[in-house]
Length: 207
Image (cartoon, rainbow, N blue to C red):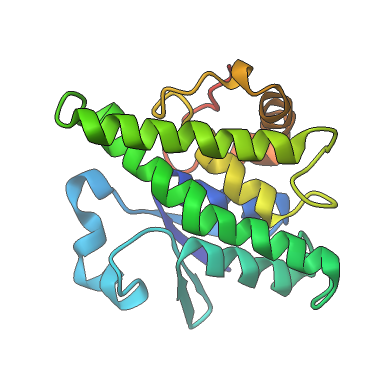
């Protein structure tokens, strides 16, 4: 059975939601990052970068949320189109967009807008502006689309988990109607609700 080392963050929730959506059995090992448990030597052997999430699948350890999503999708043959097809590469490009843009820049928005307001007017303006820009990109992509790509995929899971912290980013989802529709639709899925609650029972915020 897969062991999931995680905490209640967007990256952690990517994996618990994916495991629920894929119907894969797993055990949860909470790693309280507020207490610095990610720096424990035992966890370091599994995740050399001292970051959650990480998994153990038998003796196989894997860290980095994007890599884990790809591993789980390929393991089950679900949530990822056939390798090499145009549909596959569309999922890959939007997954990479989340990993390289939507996640890191929104993480900086959380740092300055939520946890350290008033420390840097420049940083607050920069990262809030970048958050607004990326939500405009996502809204344009989702206009007249049910999902980010051709069908429900790991790209939706990865992007949605960061959108679920819209309040931290000072984003009004109603200002982005296509994103808001997509967000609410996925929030209604039982797998998202169960996965979001891992490991500490939180409920999905609904705008």
